[in-house]
Image 1 (tube, rainbow, N blue to C red):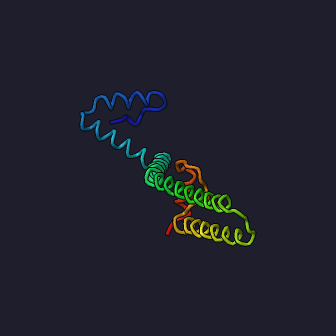
Image 2: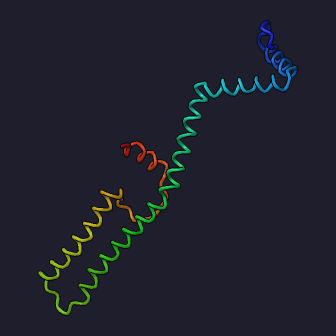
Image 3: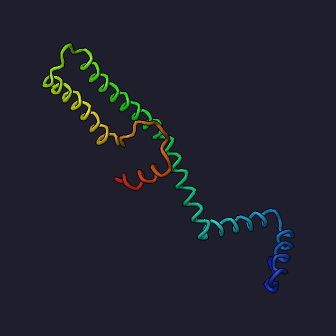
Length: 148
């Protein structure tokens, strides 16, 4: 199909004329072979690997981002409830007894601490209250560090 005697610039012209003289089936086979050769080359394999990783990252992000937003909202709500409890305890006391207030405040803080520890250990909460979508860096970190 391609003449082996062509060298340099004539080589491309020889290939072009050989391809144009092929049948449709021959052209299809030729281009399939070219695509296959590219896909199995180092560059093609790297591009496929990168594409696979990006598709996986975006899929993971789409699946987990709502869960992360919900978790952050829940912890923000829990923190605000704790602050409100401390504020109400302080504002509704006619006389502040230091020992009683400290004991009650410690109990409120202990309950918050248990909820926070549960969120960190069992649900992977990272201590952030602001809501944002998982970044690709977070996705990559999670995929490397949470293999089981």
